[in-house]
Each structure stands twice: as C-alpha cells, then as structure tokens.
Length: 189
Image 1: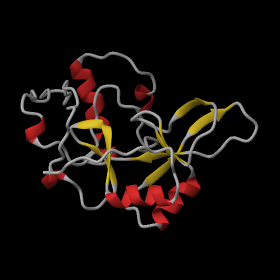
Image 2: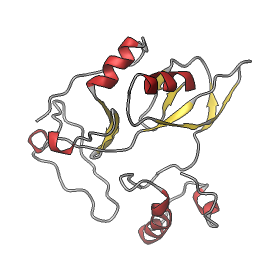
Image 3: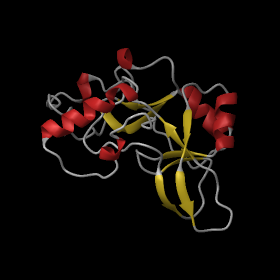
C-alpha cells in the first residue's frame, strides 16, 4: 500500500505496544488504503519488505507467510501461463554478495476459509481486534462456497499464514520446474 499521501505516516514506522483505543484509531486511519479483504491485525507491517538477505533464492520462494518472494521473470512466466491474481511489489532487500537478484514480494490476499466440519470447537474471533487464537486443524477441509474464482493463489481468511493454490497454479509451477515449492492436496466440501 502507498502511504505517501498520509501526513501521519511516521506514526506507523516503529512497532510498539499501544492501548487498544489507539490501535483502533491507527488501524481505521489506514483502512481506506488497503484492499477491503485485507485484515489489519496487530503487528501488520506496511511498505516494502526491508532487510538483509543472503544466499540464493529459487524462482518462487515462500520463506514465511509474510514473505512470499518471486523473481520478476518467474512472475512473468506464471502470468504468461495463465495464472490469475498475482501481483508483485518491489522489495528493499540488501544483499552482501556481488550481484544481488531482484526480488518481488507477492501480494496474496485472504479469501476463502475452512469448512465448519473441520473446526467444530473453534471459538469466535475477538470482536475488537479480529484476532483468532485457534490452531490449524490436522485434517483441514476447505469450504467450497467461500473459495474465490478470480485468483489461483490466496491465503485463507481464517488462517492468513496458510496459502491455498488452485490446480492451475500447481500444474503451472510444476511445468515451469519451480521445484522448491511443496504442495499438499486438500479436500473441499
């Protein structure tokens, strides 16, 4: 998201604990700048991915849930192959080696959720901050009615750290030989 037009953007630069009322005020000020489906949970990071990187990166690299990275050429190949919904944004990663690669951070918004049958004892989300303190089930089942039709890779709305991909995405990644990505098939009900 672009915060350059927000005069108070400096208030978002340093992470810190805040009373809930202040967190709510800060969150609501930036809500118009993010896609409607994007959660703004405590600890949300804004702006490009910044830091020091070492080593080599495969064409499509999922390090942590908050850091799906892709080489620009790989993103172009995925799009050219018909994969829908992928958007890459520049990073500000610093490399110590001589010829650093260009890496883009993928925007993978939350859509879809788990079927109620696999989470029968799940407590409701916090009504104030939208936090959900519930472990991911061992045998997840996707809720077919909640799955998006416009994108081939997304996060689960009720578990933002879990990436879901369509068969089109999986087949394309395998065909392009991006072998360092692992997939697990999930049932849909």
